[in-house]
Length: 66
Image (cartoon, rainbow, N blue to C red):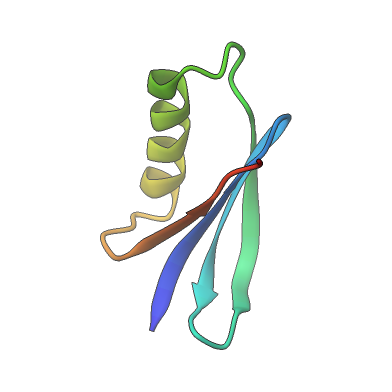
């Protein structure tokens, strides 16, 4: 099973396709800057850019700091 993994960090948002549960990245990840201010709407728009980039319609896993 493949999922779109997203890492939302303080300076960058990274996304890539991951073979789950093996945890192996498939291909190159995409790096986008974290929007400032990092409002929920701005972060949602950034996540949407990643979804659109990968033309993704499947499950998504996301991690946040804190």
